[in-house]
Length: 329
Ligand SMILES: NC(=O)c1ccc[n+]([C@@H]2O[C@H](COP(=O)([O-])OP(=O)(O)OC[C@H]3O[C@@H](n4cnc5c(N)ncnc54)[C@H](OP(=O)(O)O)[C@@H]3O)[C@@H](O)[C@H]2O)c1
Image 1 (cartoon, protein in one colour):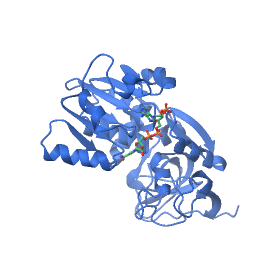
Image 2: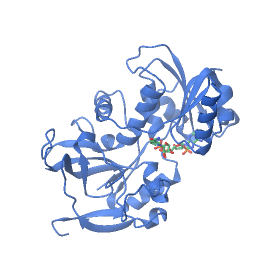
Image 3: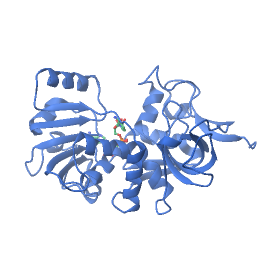
Image 4: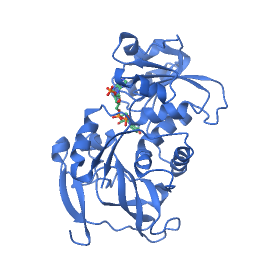
């Protein structure tokens, strides 16, 4: 490969799934002001990556075609753009790339200094790459959404975390258990022990009648539901909520927005709040340090080389990952 070219996967239009990802050689990008060029060591996939390809955010994303997808990366700084003060060539970092530009399914990617944190040597590249989108979403849902204090102070909260075996859910369970919480979690039968091992106090198989009804085995009513699955109607949540309980929906569809509006207009004590990730560098740094301190772990579902990234893409679309799917250039 020519010196200024890199291997990447890109798609040229909406739709097409894994088959539409094409292996290409493209120029290595150049970091602009406030940006750094990373030689990627690991990239993790998130459902939003293939949802953007499906067109759920059209016409906003992707900004243009062809598009190199994926945003969660860990790598080594190989070039710094003008005005970059915190990083130098050779630094190991983890970063959330801008969804406007993407770029994670490649050998090199440009990251913004202000969404990049150092990766300590104690953390592997795969543990680090899993963190940005899923870890930050879990952190925002548990702290800002549910109001859990991660130092263990605060009144005890009963939480329900749905899809606790997934990328966001597995971080959410671990983070929630750093606080004063009783955590009920849902997952498939094959992951009951796994989710318990993350710290959940009780676990429900979502394919059983009680699991589908979200009934706490110990009879608890939930103060907060961190809803990482999808397709569960308000009528299923409602009887399981405490008198002023709320559902934080991280994949809100039209009916969730309608429920949210109706609850507000009727001054309902039970609420539904859609969550949109608002990523913050200091929170990513916090998560990296939790991993370093052994208080949080990234569970890896599977790893694929960049040459087989379309298989990782198909696996993510399939929706049955336990933890994070990683692509390694
Ligand atoms: N709002 C935001 O800013 C934001 C940020 C990040 C993610 N999200 C969204 O959050 C959702 C979850 O993301 P993710 O990365 O955690 O997904 P993921 O890793 O693909 O989730 C897969 C897991 O979900 C489990 N699951 C599926 N349906 C379930 C159900 N009804 N009950 C219990 N478990 C179920 C699966 O278990 P089985 O294999 O046993 O079925 C699998 O282990 C996605 O829709 C994503 O787009 C939103």
